[in-house]
Length: 258
Length: 325
Image 1 (cartoon, each protein chain N blue to C red):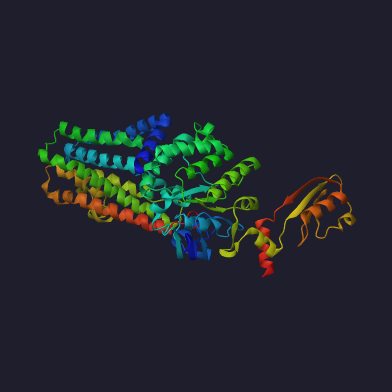
Image 2: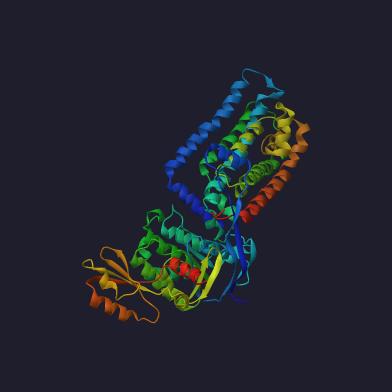
């Protein structure tokens, strides 16, 4: 399989620019710290928010940050798909090599400088328990990798579909950054928001499954369980749709010609 | 069926005209519309294994589109293309394993890696056995001189160095089909000759089918017994270059630099002679005329300082083709 050498190459390239990597790691960490600091400060002034306690909100935030952190590490290529690969015809290079072009796109753009966000997310989840969140039954932890992966696939699949619009639209811009703004809402319990937004994040741009719905599985809130169990399924379906959209886009690919 | 076969191969693009200014951009956003442009129009040809074929034609003729359809980068709008029984687009992964590609305008290597690292990565991707890899690397060092470049980052190579490395990289996995899209563009004469000699040797081994696009008829003369002439997406000629040139009468011409300006009367003896500058004259070779005869006449009649023989440019061949219609 051609993936391993490509991966090794990407790591080597990143290490060759050590300065950039260090700066990226540091700024990523600083940005990521803002959220948990805000939440802990807020709940020092108010006891609960829409019925949710501080530790609960902090846990949801940590879970969602782990998922989106993994997304930023793995799916960075989607941000440049339109401009660099479709309009700039860089995709030619990937298409004449014996590996899946989608996988090559992701591997060529792996962003290890986003890793602190993942680690911080895991740390914040732990912090929520130290702050008084009751521990769930131990067996529930077995579901954590599956729920994180399902959330990651939901995020990755949705954004892949959005980025693949670039094959058809021929505009320089991309809606990826705009859509990613919606992940901010999935970092909080969704019933804090109005019904339209809740619907949007469940069936429209299903980022609810990339944050809150997965996290709720570890909170003493059994009413959200059906949504939590749906996370892996939604992940698989969204990823399949996103990859399908990419393949459909490839048929339209004009290699700079149109 | 020939090893490479194209039947009615067609590719159309949608061209979206952009109205000027901000208002135009907004209109474009709401009503994307556009016109269809046919880059390749029902082209059919067959190429046997081991052949060396050149695709020539003016800019926008459909050369690159043909190459991209054969390499599986583009999906045909209509028509069928097969390479060794595979559909390049649908069976891309299997197809590209036996394909080597050199794009003159775009590197296949990685800017951030050294040449050696890029070679090793390619060898791993194509699963080249390490004994074969070492043997090929040794050969490429001997004939292309890539050995001393192995430690250099790709971004620091000169164009000539890079093209030598690109060619070696494309051949590391001993592909059955080598596709070169304008491989000699921008290269100096020495590098050009070196690449041509290497490719000629590769052709003579007969194991690699070579397809190249070029604007330089020197490449064609040195490498490709067979020429496909494309213009405006159509195939105009399929056969040897000499036949094409002879058919069109667009033979070679002699360009002489003179030590001093000569009066028009001195040029009367050379029909069709044109001035290309104060002290430069171009004399076309007419049908049935021997080159040696013309050169001898020029040397005897004019104060010649320098003299060279030019192949007719592709554009001229195409223009003549249309005149003859």
